Image (cartoon, rainbow, N blue to C red):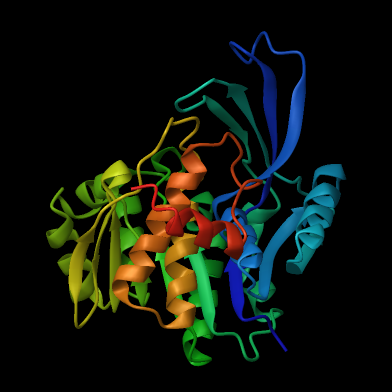
Length: 314
């Protein structure tokens, strides 16, 4: 029997410089785990959900590290090990606050070569929710087809499908191809989680209400537009509203904030809470994420999330 939640993407080894300055001058690094879908998997697991992460990894030390790290987090894995292609990895420089510079080595990675046949080996029995992003379909035609295949299978199983555009324009062959594919994938999802700048790129408006309306007309049941420190605008088939963000003492690193936001919203979807509570959870975890430097190591437990919300921080 499958887990309650299935995530599908590319996990990567991340090396963060220990000292400030250019990566060309850095001599010591801390190894971590990275990847948008990985962050969501870890976040939902910490909130108590049974989660499976499906991917393809190289038969190399980075692949060993990622598989072991996921298992230590309590995440079930559906992993195919590739003897010919490497596990992707990235470097990030050290900054006291703001966005660090990040460099990737993922071309022809194992995950970029994931196939529809790989998807067919995944156990969907009893799973309730599939979460995907726009990153994996950008890596190759193979991975793009695999994403379409997993959506098809999830739909046949009656699962809720969640989609975060998570635009990485540098990975696409062209902006037009990115827009066309991302919006087509969004049309197959029940929940769409765009940022306001992503909405502007994908449909030509910075108006949160117009963005939400656009994706609802494509077929989404719930659209939550991320507004950064201003919070979120959420719209379902029966209600809508703007939901204020939580005050942030100091922005340390915004990487992973959108994934933390997705964790909050999806936990609410799984529990059937109100649209307001979904957005508030997303805002809370997003705020917690930008006040720390790690992509996922500080994602909260349920008790930590409830305490953060209860104390107000507003």
